[in-house]
Image (tube, rainbow, N blue to C red):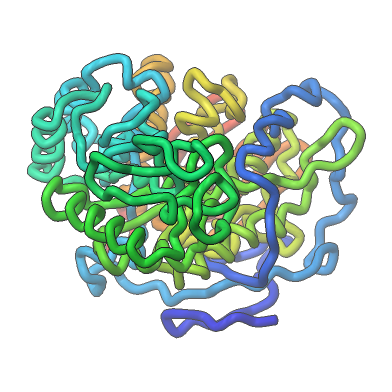
Amino acid sequence: MEDPVPDGGALYPQGKFSHAGAASFDGAGESTNRSGRSHREELSRGGTSGKFLKEGDAEHNAPDTITPESVDPVEVRVEEVVPVQEILKDDLIQRGREIFFQAFNWESCKQRWWNLLANRVDELANWGFTSLWLPPAWDSLAPQGYLPRDFYSLNTSYGSDGELRTLLRKINERGIRAMADIVINHRIGSCQGYGGRYNRYDGMPMPWDEHAVTCDTGGLGNPKTGVIFEGVPNLDHTQEFVRNDLKNWMRWVRKDLGFTDFRFDFSKGYASKFVREFIDAAQPFISIGEYWDSCRYVGPDYSLDYNQDAHRQRTVNWIDGNQGASCAFDFTTKAILQEAVWKKQWWRLRDGQGRPPGVLGMWSSRAVTFVDNHDTGSSQRFWPFPDDHVVQGYAYILTHPGQPCVFWDHIYDWGDFLKGEILRMIKIRKRNDLHSRSRVEILEANNSVYAAMIDQKVCMKLGDGDWSPRLGDWELAISGQAYAIWQKPQNLLPA
């Protein structure tokens, strides 16, 4: 069933195929309804972190031949690529040229983080990052900030109210943006109420009673509209008084504090239509949802299935639920990419219709790609990208469509080599004006190599196979163990 397409787009069921079987994909995408398992279920099973298979195991689920007919066609949302000079400056989804930076990890709460980060703003701006994602900046039971209590109290483990405001002022003055981590799925109560549970919020701003908490998590409100976050009171977003108070708070976060972008934590926990309502009220420049869903694993050794269309479809459905107002982190791409680099199964990086297999292959303007974050990596390491292959992961996300997000640890904690390679790749992306809707031609995806051309300006490969671009003038821009990127000489780039 075809869904309506915003922005005057049109749906087509299959990619356009070009020379030598390479599929040409022009970024975008959308499709139908599915439901998913609980958030973090994947973590308890080990994901693709290497707990179930050893490197060198036999390939699982590798199709003998990948053709457009080998899987059901996936509907792709096609959006017009608008010249950047014709786009309003603040229409960041349309521009599609963001490079996000997660400016913390799980251990950042152990030091005066706002002060430390203030000293890094200038270099982060100089390196090309456009938005700095900060940890939750308000009172929380847990020092990391993900069990919020008083949303208006800014004295936290990361620093004081004044230190936060100084940091935000410096970020804005430097011409980049600050992203607020919006944790509104749940809230820790201040006192006991119905059933002896801590489901009341007396004595603090937004002093809600038990009706603010869903009936399936210990309150007197309505049932959840999403997945339950276990062990804490989950907020009832169907209550108008809850939504109105949250909207007023988000306006304060935007206008008074100076955050410009939003990241919606555990966005699987409440209906996506509410995200659209919050965005309309607070008007962030750009928003990203954390829709972390379980992939499909098969076989006795619990191997990642080749076909993850249902997984990425659920993320696309979430984006559709807010009418495309928010982007979403592309967990599908992370799952497939880390499996491919770990097991050298490069065929995974082309779906059955010749396109990239993640959300970026369906709706690339809304896909935010990443290698790791504070949950999957850092000291938690719930679902980490294979350590020895992180640079290959960045070679992929910094050349492909979608909008990439770089993790703090990989710039500041993993040594000068990885930092230098990432910064060089960012320069390549910017020099060649690669963006969220860039056109990808997947030239090879087999047991030895993955190779692609992006916008006919950049070629890249992953794997040990012998491959290089053979037609036209290309210069090697960067290379290392099992990765290489080529670009056109400067005089051949479009004016």
